[in-house]
Image (cartoon, rainbow, N blue to C red; front, side, top):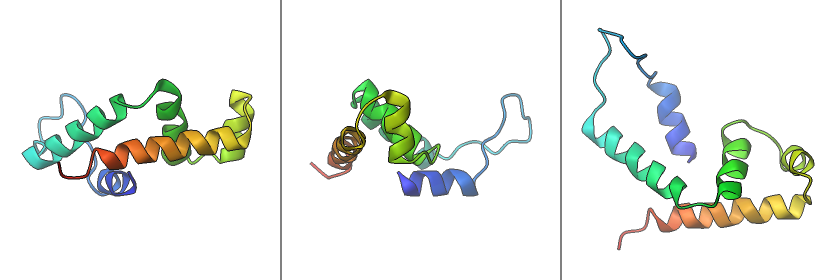
Amino acid sequence: LADHRARRARAPQALEGDAHAEPERPQEFDEREALERRLAGLSEIERDVLRRFHARAESVREIAKSLGVPEGTVKSHLHRARQKLAQGTRPS
């Protein structure tokens, strides 16, 4: 996930209708598609907690408070989500 964010930070996304935009490379498209499939395999709460923690840089405490759950529950959701994502990256 961190690598994905780093790549996105280095390569700005083209806006729709940008005639001078460089087309996305097939490998990048495949990687993004694979990530989206793995994210779709998470439960709604796992996706929400994972995105809030990694993409929005919210702390475990902030997420727990806004969801009205203990911090340990947020940590459990993060752990399970990371495990599921990692399973999707291992060769079969």
